[in-house]
Image 1 (spheres, one colour):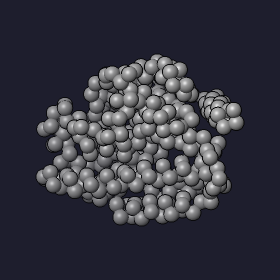
Image 2 (tube, rainbow, N blue to C red):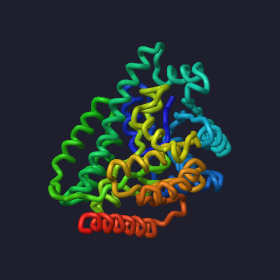
Image 3 (cartoon, rainbow, N blue to C red):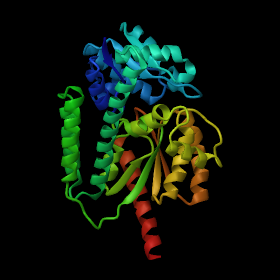
Image 4 (spheres, one colour):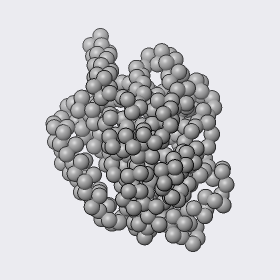
Length: 363
């Protein structure tokens, strides 16, 4: 079994080390690129979500490198992600690829198939082995997420924000040459040390922007056109409402009750949205209110074209923005999104937030 999986932000870094440590052969997809998008767009339905198109490109590129098994999480409820594995398997079979899909569906969809797939992936025979493997994966994903969080902080305060990019790009290059948990942890520690050596502007008080919306467009830099870097180079401190760590903490580590942070967002969203609408629509509304309460200057909603839950959230965010006098901008992403217009909107939004902040400070 040669495992591959979608390229979702830094998940592949933790996933690569994790499965290698378990003795699995891993073929992670290359980092997302224009080629990845072109492959996925060519073979996917025109009106399907952008994440599915990127994933098809990921899988084709991995299959060309020898992968024969795709690992994917499942979903339920009013969101098309729950059908991804079926659509993707059919597309790949139509292309002549006889590939095995292992889908980790929510427990509510049935414990027996989930247990069988977990044992198969983890090469485990009992729940104790699974728990031990899970703890290893949890440490890897937390540290991988921390590096991105730290880079966003350093970029906003750095004397030379492009030095942060050099450190992170070097980290990504070395990931491909690193094998197993121990070496990956050492690489992560070296990267953290390098980031902490970046000289910062001590008296700088950056604009703070929260990124909210659909999880894939938040965490995959190719899809969101490196929004964290672009904002960081404008001197903006960026915080993401959803990360792999937050997702695992809510859906796995604290199952079935959910994490405290995400439950709080559900409560904040209730005056505007009382029920689940699929995906992370409810969390998007709650996150906007959360960032307003935390004193952030504004939020940016990121969503792929035709994402149903986020379209619902977008219509509600207009009311939230008016009620709370809180700037909210929505950026819709698809394969036709132009970087120049995207950057212009970001710059205009940051300028707006700076003017608002100055008006508050100086009257």
